[in-house]
Amino acid sequence: MVRSLLIVLIPMLVTQGIALELFYGNYLRVMSRRLSEGIASEISFSLDLLERYHGRGDRAWLIRQAHTRTQLVMEWHPGDHLGKLGSTHVVGPMDEDLVHELQSAIAYPFFIDWLKDPHTVFISIQLPDGVLSVDTPRKRLDVGQLWLFVLWALGSSLLLFAIAAAFMRNQVRTIRRLANAAEQFGLGRDIGPIRPEGAREVRQAAIAFNRMQDRIFRFVSQRTAVLAGVSHDLRTPLTRLRLSLAMLPRSGVVDAGLLREDFTDMIADVAEMERMIEGYLSFARGEGAELPERLDVGSLLEEVAGSAARAGTMVRSVSCVPGLVLEARPDAMRRMLTNLVENARRHNAGVWLSAYDEGNTVIIEIDDDGPGIAPDRREDVFRAFASGARGGTGLGLTIVRDIVRAHGGDIRLATSRMNGLSVRIVLPR
Image 1 (cartoon, one colour):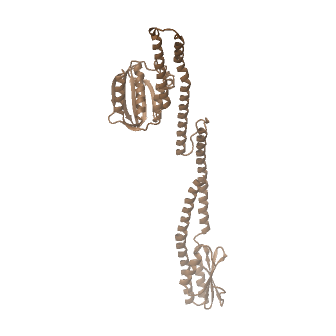
Image 2 (image 1 turned 90 degrees about the vertical axis):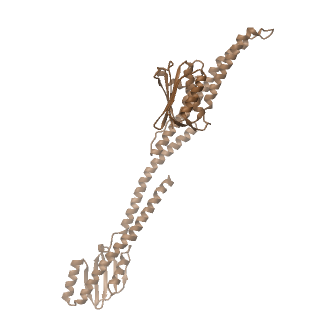
Image 3 (image 1 turned 45 degrees about the vertical axis):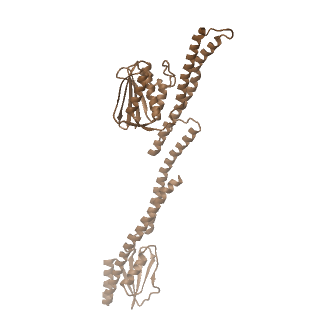
């Protein structure tokens, strides 16, 4: 969090410093020079008039006019002498600018006091026969208190920094919550879904984390269910094999013809076990090692339809939008479509394959005219061992949905136009 706040604070301070330098180095200096030039010009003009008109009445009238017209309060001190020359110093360029302008405008020595009164600048000019004091309103020379601008710049920076820190704290808190959830999940603790909050990117990360957590839990639960079902499904053929072996004669001469039926049953049990074990291994193996490629969806459907027709499936039609391509794992896609077509073949149903694009997705539909699946069972059949189909392991549709979701897609079951089953697969391109 400290690093993020420094990323906000340092550019802000640099910006305020540049703004201060631009104001101090340009606007303040220019305005101060122009104001000092105006005061010096008025004083120089007044001195020229005083030198031309020496009468007491004339000087008094000129001093009154200067006060009325220019707000300069002048007072004549005949015979006086200045004790010191130059100027006292204040923050800002006003003192130096006024000294420079007075030196250019008049030929007499002078002393400027900036510190005696906060509202008045006292200028004393040494003339040949006395001293002329000029009380100048400070507001005519001072553009503004520099510390006010500095205070405003620093204050606004601190205020904006505090606001940024508050917002940053909220964002960091959500990121820390997400990191803690990931840490707890990595330790095998079920913390449940986290609430998406904070910035849009953080909310997207939280949503993605919840989806990942759900997929992993589903993956683990499915594999656990498969492992639990292995012993249950294999127990029946193993029991039959054990009984058949127990009933075989242990001694004497045995007529092989009398045991032919028993051997045939045992071979069938072994074949059934091989089929179930192959299904379990296929489910547990997954398709994670295969790399995605650009697939021609039309060619893929034709290949699957050809293989299905050779296996005895009645493929009614294959249709696909020309040039439709998809980024996917070839073997996994082929296996997914083969499983769906194989399910239709087991029910002696005809199959219609089609594919088209819809926005940024590819839609693949497999329709058949078989018995279909009741609406209240369409979600249950995706669970392991839930299909109950004759001659199957109950993992076909589970494998299909795993492959679809591994590609970032989704699968839905509905009633086809032929009153059979319609499988709709939506995959991102």
